[in-house]
Length: 451
Image 1: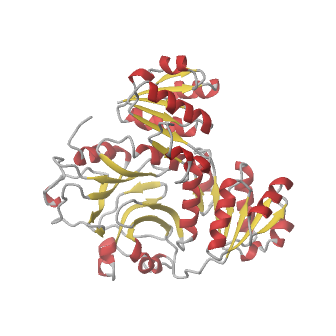
Image 2: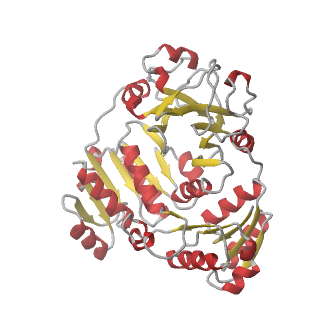
Image 3: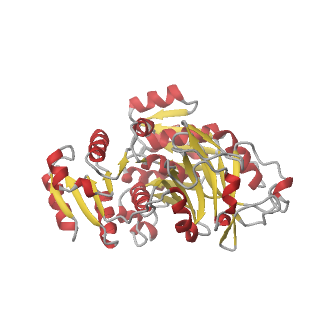
């Protein structure tokens, strides 16, 4: 397909990298000359320098022949204008990254007029959802939800004293509710591997588990002996995302404290929130953190606009007694660095946004895509199309791509762990975990077309 990407920041760059690797014809529009230089040097894609709101620039980038336009600049307004112009050029699919909730809420004006945006992706909403899911899942370091059948993907770091330490995956089948969860990947020494029944779980492994929502409480004790209830969260930074997060935590009757150095933002938070304690000052001030009772905090959540302060304040919070720290970084290149510092959870909205956009582009019927930042592996929720290779045959007779595992079949809304005798019917959705070299091969199994 011919795909025009408007904006070459982290989201645009990663989309261009992934989609060009998948064989699509990619053009990029970007006005920042530094970003133009970066993408030109690193990727084999067509790049046009100029304003994205200019029809002349868009035409030079090939908008007239584009099948899809991805408007992912840092400006909501420009992204909306690009999609409106794309409609005039006859582009079939227009996808925009929009941050402002006034345009993304269910009752927003976007849903009732002619902006011509087919799919809206809101990074802030995704971020808030991820943080809430992590806080709500004791011990989790990674969270993702799928659209079908109440199936969850959860990542955990295996403690030394976890009941599953030293056990082979085949031994877990003897555990109650073992038909409701499956460990689909293990990250060990920075390498992501697809496990087999003979794989033994080791302390400090990062494991990724597909689990039915109702079975999660039964699985948690296997990786976390002491699942304490969350009572206190300290948030650093006042912005749209942090205010929305604090409101939702208030609704859950969790004690919240917000720290913000800017006086005007502090007053804004105090006005917007009912039960949250708001403190003005730096999250690098040890005395202020002690005043906030950092030693009793279940989570310290750093989601300010300052990358460096987020990292440093989280390290300090952990040193002063916070049980866990969640760090927001908008720069994907920071993710492995922060992980190497021993941080508990790192959230990168831009990489999550890439996954949200990819689901609307992939061939076949792709319901959702979850990307893993360190390995470029993916968890894909796919619908088996009529006439595809995967239909109607026992899985034991299928040659499934090496580097991939079929983790779950959703049948009539219920999660089923597949066996060799399982077969897939047309229209059923499945969840597959795949390493980078297997992604395209997996897609071809579930699609009856090659384009």
